[in-house]
Amino acid sequence: MHISIHKWLRIAFINLLIVSILGIILRYKIAFSLPFIEQKKILHAHSHFAFAGWITQALMFLLIKQLKHTSLENNLAKYKTILWANLITAYGMLLTFPWEGYGLYSIIFSALSVFVSYWFAIVFWRDLNKQAQPKIAHKWFKAAVTLNAISSIGAFSLGYLMMNKIMTPKLYLSAIYFFLHFQYNGWFFFACMGLLMVMMEDLITDKKKLLQVFYFFLIASVPAFFLSALWLNIPFVLYLIVLITAIMQLIGWFYITEIIRKNKNIFSQINSTSKILFILSAVALTIKLLLQAFSTIPSLSQLAFGFRPIIIGYLHLVLLGVITIFLFAYTTNFEMNFISTKLKKGIIIFVAGIILNEVILMLQGSADLGYVSIPYLNELLFVVALILFSGLAVINFSFSRKNKLP
Image (cartoon, rainbow, N blue to C red):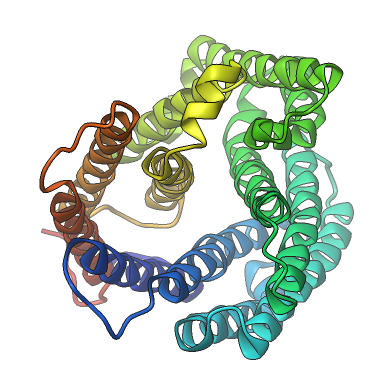
């Protein structure tokens, strides 16, 4: 007997391990000396491969599994070329960014990655329309692939600026934050919420409340970009819209938690390990939404966007704390026949690394706010990177077919 996890998902987990190796290199260079490595180039490879090689690869497979009009084997055969295309572009970016940064080949692979996302969106949308019983989850999925396409505006703008060496700070940062917003709060978040709806929808009678939650987040999805761009000194009317957006997201999330609290039967389909992971992801999302709401206070916004550790901490909170832990929870509950002791150990190590990473980054950011120097924080972050890698190595090893149930 072995852990049952499809090869496409296993590839995504291997890619996450590679992302952690790049993280170790980045942290080592900051803490110590690594003169032959250019930090920005590795950082570009780290972020692009995390998005395409880990999260997008995993989400594409999990979304394909939701198509019920034909068998999984037929669906995977149909989407096989798309999955391979996404993987090739991800590895293309992994290899070219460390070599040339934003250059001809890395931009080509980045552009091809975007076109693959368009391809997936069109094919997947059509297949969703073939489903016998349209569900609320399908609305989240359609919004997810649409917002993923919208994020490409930021990616193409950034590529244009880099190729033409237009380094106007506001344009450069606007392009980056536009792309990040519609990836983090669009494609990643809406796809994960769709998967959550798949778990909840058939067990809940009050579908109206679930629809309200969807429309709250959908309406907020575009103006919420300005929560990451308050430093642009936006007009007061737009500021009020952004404030309402932050409140709408909190209300939508409160509705979800209340629905789950009142429908205990949702927990009956979740094993104990996955339950803990879902709770941790929910806590991280709550913190994220509260931080967004507090960022509407101008003085706090100026401080937050002025210190790199706070920005990095926030991005990792979403990418690791919210999205990655959710994917771990969903995978361990629905993609495996059992959860081995080795897998549990790997998850504990990895989650501990995420928590330590956030604590140290916030400590570093707070110290920077007060212009206080705390020794050895960069060295500690390097150790945390090693912890994250160790946890992922154990997790990936636990997927081996030789790993028996103890």
